[in-house]
Amino acid sequence: MKLELGFIEIKDIQFSNECKVENGTLFVDAEAVKAFVYEDDDVKAYVKSACFDIAKPGESVRITPVKDVIEPRVKVEGPGGQFPGVIAKVDTVGSGRTHVLRGMAIVTAGKIVGFQEGIIDMSGPGAEYTPFSKLNNLVMVCEPVEGVHQHDYERAVRIAGLRAATFVGELGRNVTPDEVQSFETYGIKEGIEKFPTLPRVAYVHMLQSQGLLHDTYVYGVDAKRTLTTILYPTETMDGAIISGNCVSACDKNTTYHHQNNPVVADLFEQHGKTLNYVCNIITNENVYLADKQRSSDWSAKLCRLLDLDGVIVSQEGFGNPDTDLIMNTKKIEQMGVKTTIITDEYAGQDGKSQSLADADPLADAVVTGGNANEVIVLPPMEKVIGTLNYVDVIAGGHAGSLREDGSIEAELQVITGATNEMGFNRLSAR
Amino acid sequence: MKNGHDFLIITNNPLVERCLGEYYSVEMFEEASYRDILVKVRDLVYASHTLYTHPLSGSVKPNETPYKSVVVSKVPHTFDPGEAEIIAYCIEAFDKFKPRGITLTDPVKRDFQLIDYTLICGAVDFDAAAGLSKIK
Image 1: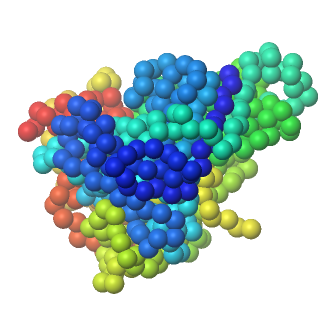
Image 2: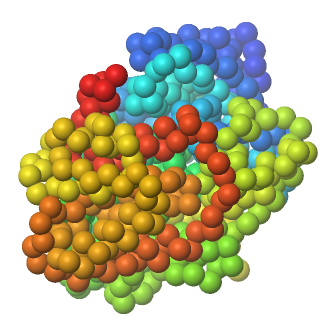
């Protein structure tokens, strides 16, 4: 399957009374986006208001609480459309051509529960921890109608963000991209014939799937109701996986992370050179232990069936997923397939504690995204998009986290994407 | 909805008791802390009860939410060292988080109860929204 991505560089966003992309600037009429967002019945029923703001790199702006970050894209050739099974029909994506508005994102923000997490600082020390500080962000702050159930509201805000991204992505349909790249993986036999001497490598992509605010959707299906299965890597790049997860800001995978999964990007970079990138294996992280056993058994079975030489395994979240990570790794290794895992660490504020809630000697190749317990101080920002009401309550915050001057002392966990377990972050030990 | 004849839910979450008590055996420990629940579960696992759900369900951190629900078997079966290892790791993981000194407001407590409830519903395959609508 072959996918072409046409990258349209967005260097600026401006509110306007028209909607277009011109010379690297997105001109957007907030009312037009809002009208498109509100065509959805759930949004109409459950979202009282949706207000737009713009946050640019280097500005003294803090966005919080963040729900999701989404890159606007549009399918211009080939089957399917954006976010299949959710916004577009459920046709298989991952082939043809998709235009990407690169350098910007839609950020959804606002309260869902009273401990809603996630901070993006656009400047200062906090900005260094989140990749989203480098983007031009069109932020949609949502408010719920009174009395709405959290399940209904989470879904409505999730859909609202995807619809806003779809609307904006559509503006890139007839724009000539600044750069076009193509990505292709092959059928099993074809791949072996093409690269007979290269090691066969796949990506075991673990998806958060525990419950409300802890979910991921694949072609619209709640991942906790799926069995471990195979995707072409280009399906992931083309919007097949979306995030419904907004707990644990530092290591949740936003929709943007799925669209721009760095493991997929790096495997494609080496595809045909040092390795043969076979496929992605997606597997869930359920709470029920028998589900964990079944899913990890299937991961290992598929690795063997595909005659893989090695896999990269990434997890999402803390605690419960550590057990899935270790089950997957151990069983895959026992099939004779080499593994390298990507995780982050909760090693205590001094970094001296055991990092994961599970371990095994076979999991001996580990890449870390950083210690989420590390304490940081974020200086006050001139402008807050959203609200600071929840900072004391969120993970990584404590009583008095939010100081009188608007600065925040908290653990790294408060920052969206800070210790991302796909490795899409800015921490480094070099 | 899974067949829960053998399920025993150990919890300190009143919402779990209210919504699931009709369908499953629920042992409610109102005064127990999150850690107390983990220790009760550990003792049951040591006594050969089957551990059905992961004790660190959810990405809400153990020093963030006061609520925890775990499903074990009603009666002892066979001692499983793997399950004993999981619960031991969980208590170790709990202990590395510092207390935060926060007094939670009632709305925030209700939200934490809701999250814990939905996680356990997901685990036992119970329709969380339907359970909530029945108690309204």
